[in-house]
Image (tube, rainbow, N blue to C red):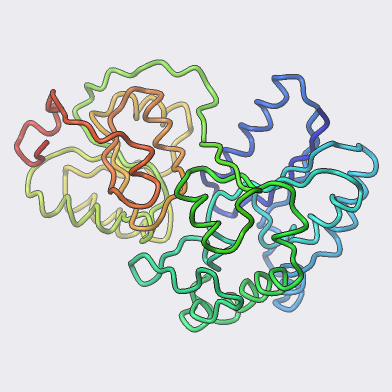
Length: 341
């Protein structure tokens, strides 16, 4: 097939960006012709607020540029990932007008919640679910802690709900879990257009030793990911269970300070993927401390590929992704009695 893959890369690289790159490689490895339509949010630097607001709701540049690509390449499918803010929903119409099927993978809950997380003030929040205009998000500055920025995203969602974009301009939605599918349906998206395709590991994984004597966290250092809860838990343990933390984010300063105060905590910062896989494979367990509805954290399937147990809250889709089993062999890092299994 001929496929166009469209994605707006984040300023702070995350699992969604990696997923897009892996999917493109996978499609090409199976003989498909893939054209990339990629933009990057680094382009937001210096952009006037009114210009950005207009592009978020309807980007004329994307409509013209992507339309030209579809006319030239004649793909059967245009597959979208992140469209906020530079691609915008105008891109769906550009692809649709040229006869291509329009597919959108939803890596988060952006079409139902302006911050995409169903998370506010340290807890799960569904106040905007199903609302024509998500006023609660605007009132609480849910996107980038800004009334204005949240209002722009809320306006984009409301305008395109009113236009019927989410119902008519897309042929298929892909979400990563059954939990995500249920939320999308509850938010008003057409059930018959929503399929589930979990995240995957784009490599032949070899099981790790699992004998490194440490627990590992890999992810964004932020409140919704529960990194503050994890640090507090390690302080409360009161014993030397080694914890390696990989990642960066707004709470990096707090992690750095904790690593200075607690010898058991080691912050490694950003690490290349080959070393991440090796560290996950050698860990006694991977901990996912998220306090928000994850959709399907890539790090979980990466741990599965290395044979590393995952410790996570039974929240959102994680209860369906992770099988709850009794631990028959207490990992070495937990022998001190700090954990119960």
